[in-house]
Length: 377
Image (cartoon, rainbow, N blue to C red):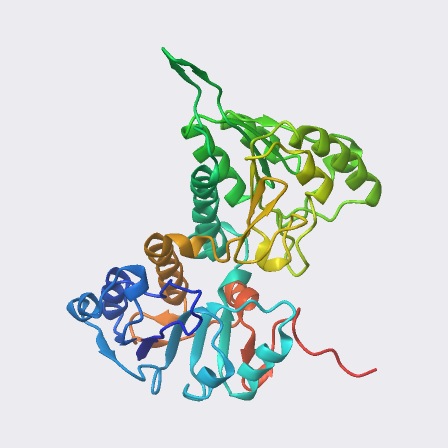
């Protein structure tokens, strides 16, 4: 059983899908490991560290691999180099990219989308979205502090008092909660909002104040899987009015709102941006999906009326070493469920709900119920 760790071809992706620690554990499972030359360099892992852990480091590592591990979905040119029947695990970004998913089926590959991991207790250690969002929320606050021209905590000095920064977090998932915790540790006054009522207690437990229109619709605003539902136009208007009044008093706004399979909802209008004081900072963590903020530019820091709108791509990748360490462990835990430890070979249980939730292609066909081609009428 040969597992290959492919290098990322996207220049904006510094993460890597394995670390020396996970290489050792794969070898203990009976696998041989081949790592693409230079795959870990941008995550601070030189080739020599992979060799010391027991991996072979080479060009063309994926050629004969039974399993290929990546961070981002392989490009069509990469797929051509994979062995037919190989298992490929990566963050596949399948929504809106059905032709790219079909390419895996056409190549005879077994593709798994790590971001589709079911939100169940058994899969928590495999949850890529949570591990990477946690780091993104932390980094969002660090970037905000770097762009903000003032201190976060209140400082009382002989020369006078510096007031604490006011930070507003919009969207209280994993990234939002970590942003709240980090901003509080830095001494900021933190408020947060979300359409899911269940997070109110979490926000308060971190020492932040919860801001929302708490009507009847709000009380039903969560799916069974724990995601936010799309709210009615009426609710959106009421919430927008409340938020607009709140935002103009804030120094920093961090937006994290994403709905799987849909463009990011617009939360901060250009009028809201204009209402903020010059020197304020907005961090848009949803910029890769169209952004939560009007005026955000992907991969850039835009300045609108003295307000900085930060739209960095791949926020977790800005902490590449930490992000790679967590992502590689997510992959290791996932693959452990696909490997027969006695026989030391791949043994996929296609009835496992983890497999059903993440498998995109098999035997030349797209098999995931969401992305499977619809039969002709």
